[in-house]
Image (cartoon, rainbow, N blue to C red; front, side):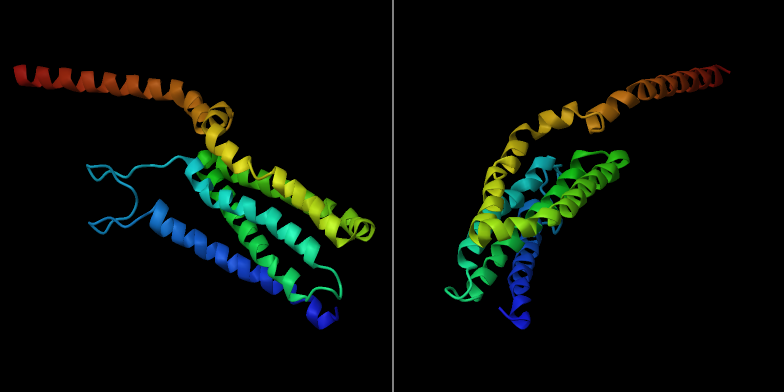
Length: 223
């Protein structure tokens, strides 16, 4: 493959990214925030009050993307042989890869944004980014040697098997996510527990002020 053709596989990934973003926009418009008859958006109860959905509902695109990643990696590995298969075949494998990558990425960001309170959400996303950057810096140190020794078929399949093992992750978070969030020291439950004494004190002060105001009104009426 010459240098001119070697950059073309990025077209497949780019197309997959565009499809993934479009898919997420449509999900947000028609599933997460559908238009109501009165022109408002979002799921509402019979009184018109907005119904807040659980963070796990944002993982639906990730569940679709989780299947696309291993498919794309196996596809790339066994169509990327020089000479016997046209270069457009492994290039097309980038479409499900880009789709799966962007849908998982956006779903995770949305999940963190809803699972943690404002005081902790930035730290949660930063920790996620740090882990991703560490992995991105470590893998290039050995991936070239791995592809030379295993060839493109089995090297890509190795990543495909890893992605295949990770397929159940969004489904597990959908089932156990609420329990995990309740045990987190930085989640809404922990923050509510920390603020409970302060809230009780404020409530007590508010009740005292109301009692004092009521007493003053009674005295004024008697005078």
